[in-house]
Image (tube, rainbow, N blue to C red):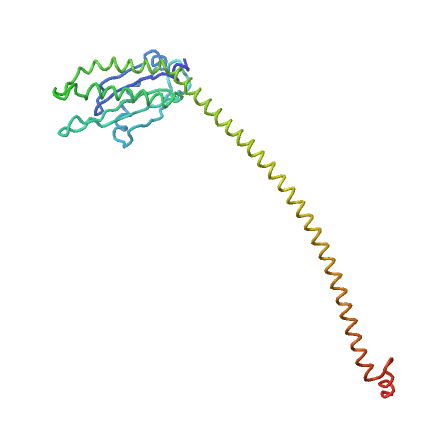
Length: 258
């Protein structure tokens, strides 16, 4: 029974300017739920018509006294449209509402409501011919059409859900294949990057070794240069002092000092 609730419309109603024109009830399910959907819809339609939203849903929670002792989550889905027959009359606010399980496919419900809305507009407002006056058919005839739309939609629910699931699986499969290809391409790029990194590291190590060797060589060059400069300076000082004081031990300067 839970599966039937999750893929069926419990109650559907079509109103014009808040006046109920047609309604559909899943009598078997509503009896087991002990639920009066007509009262719930009547309470909500006034607020829905006063809102600016043309399509949406309202969560409902009730505690049934029937076969389901626990709380059942329900949602009221709605679709409304302002329809004017001509420029001299005010537009009619047509509202199609459906009460269903909160677990039902939302797209399924809204597509069904949109189908009902379109068929009602074509049934009630479209003239049969431009040269003929606007014909108003008997409203009771549309109830049969609305019931057929709902029954056909519910009969196709499993097929449409299976098709949607298959399409979703194919979409996920395509995404996974693309991701795998990207991972493989990324792996090749990472492998190439690792090889390049290894070459760069090897070049960096060789450069570091050459730098250390050059640094040591320059240090020894500087030491030798300083030693040569120091030796030349010492020799110059010795020659100058020897010229003044006598070679080799500066005897003249030493005797003069004594």
